[in-house]
Amino acid sequence: MDKVFGMISLGCDKNRVDGERLLGEVKRHGCPISSDLSEVQVLIVNTCAFLNAAREESLSAILEGNGYRTKGRLEKIVVTGCLPEKFISELYPALTEGDVFLGVKDAEELFPALERSYREGRINAVGTGSGERTERFVTTMPHLKYLKIADGCFNHCTYCLIPKIRGRYVSYPMEELVREAEGLGETDELVLVAQDTTRYGEDRGENQLVELLRRLSRLSNIAHLRLLYCYPEVITDRLIAEIRDNPKIIKYLDIPLQHSEDRILKLMGRRTTKAEILALLQKLRREIPSIALRTTFIAGFPSETEEEHEALLAFLEEAQFENCGFFAYSREPETAAYRLPGQIHWATKRRRVNALYKKQAEISAAKLATRVGETLEVVCDGIDYEKGCFVGRAYFQAYEIDGAVYFTSPRADEGGRYHVRIERADTYDLYGTAEEIEPPVPGRSQP
Image 1 (spheres, rainbow, N blue to C red):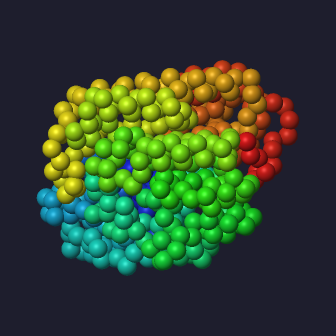
Image 2 (tube, rainbow, N blue to C red):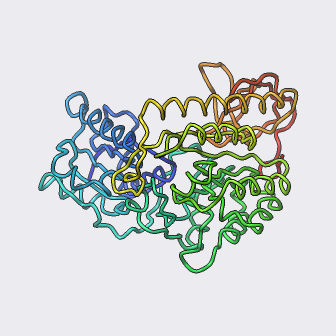
Image 3 (cartoon, rainbow, N blue to C red):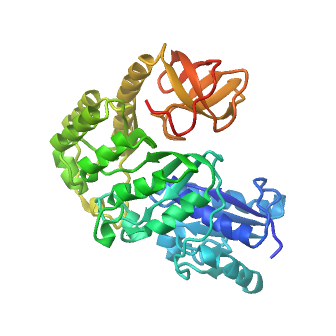
């Protein structure tokens, strides 16, 4: 098939990895990939369906892409990812803009389905794949790559559709993950992701996350490891010790908490209490004093009272996270929370989200202000042409979800690490100047 391919990938970094496997199939078949949609003949739209807003964004991307049939060279649209995996009965045959529909485990069916579509017309191939983890075409910066270590989830939080989209938790074999990481080439930062990274191996009878971290740390091509999506009840003393003692693991944890108040946590189907969360945060900071902690919270969960909202605001002040994300509760059909009494008006949810962001902005700004005058090690992610300087991240900033460090320097290479003296801070970002010294050796820097 001699066609030019392009991709629009939406949603989380886990979905990005799935998209990279589809692009890997494109490269394996020798087809070019273009970011110029006017040149693309086959457009892959890798969708997200986690929330209603994500589904609307996915449908908008498909409709927008369809416009290139008249203003470009577009011949086929492949709709893939979570949206067709869960909602194919609503999409096919109704969504006439899509020519091929694939699910989340159908990467190897991309070309067979496309060939059929060119012969026969629109094709529903959702669920026809074996789930084989095909080769990836990496779309991130060369120095930063993701490693998806598992798929699915068996936490069954009452607000979440993921188990109905992705199925039960499945850990990928450790040997395959090690080979995949080794095959990614020289990588300054390898980010481990899954719906719940901390449960790696439990579906096979034993939690093996620490062993996986040790195996990955032995690879000479990997300089640093970052952990995202670590559920609080599975952050064990053994894992804390590994993060503390392993020089390759960045002292940073993303711990999705969703709320602070016990009644709401129970309604959400979460397995921790406020006291247990606070004890965990205290232990992490005692064992790893420099650790950076980020989390996410849901505002306006069914029956959440004003008092519980105020308690969550107070919890932010007490917990002092480096960064937080906040989301208004989305009422999703087929979830247990959909049927809960006390559904909250969207205006109230929006007000509560805004209040939470305002409180966290004050906390983040105060924390960053203490960095002024310090010299931080910063990995360079490139150039910000609007600001006219380089942009990068310190260890407490994960790519695309936290703030950044903007710095001036006579020169800086993408992926290089530099000592930057911080001169100014705002709510989420830092600003400074790289010191004229040799950049630090990758893999040796730790706060």
